[in-house]
Figure 1 (cartoon, rainbow, N blue to C red):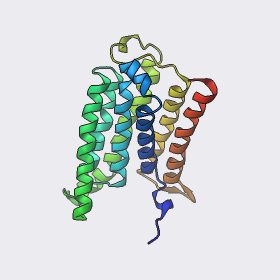
Figure 2: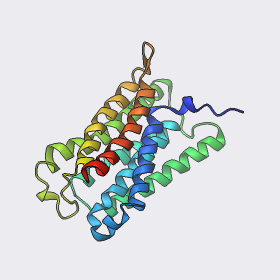
Figure 3: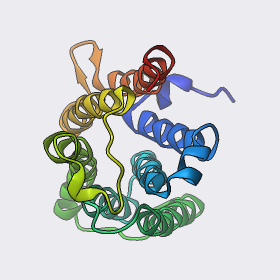
Figure 4: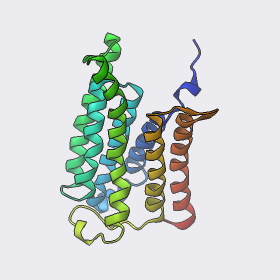
Length: 218
């Protein structure tokens, strides 16, 4: 049995890898930053969002897709500092467990637990991933349109973030969201694979912000 790596070079895999790397970074090298300043806790929540959405895209169903949509829209109150990063992390942790549980059960049963009608099924298949992408899109939009311009109203739960790496990541995230949205309507344009473009763009999102930290110091 041969593992077909190219089969998994899709946007969903890239999002999953981004989330795992993000979580690993904040549990590893960046953990002292969180211990010194608990307001960085939102990074744990955002990493779990990416992992949840990535799993749902690789194991698509009504249950996993719904969980991913809810998880992605938790971005809004978290990025607007309506609650603490640890509160958001706890909520995202529960949603991740539910999505992983649903995906595991459906894999074991070799079929979805909820089977909608043909029309509803087609709508959900297209729009649940689309809504997940739109939920994630609020992260860079709120960052650039509000927090980056004036971070003072959010200081109770969020630090001011003007680091080059954070700015670059959010700018690149806008492109990734665009690719994820287009992917719901077309997998390829001629010989150009939109799915593979999303995967490679996700890899660049891992490398370029890290490079900026090494070169620019933040």
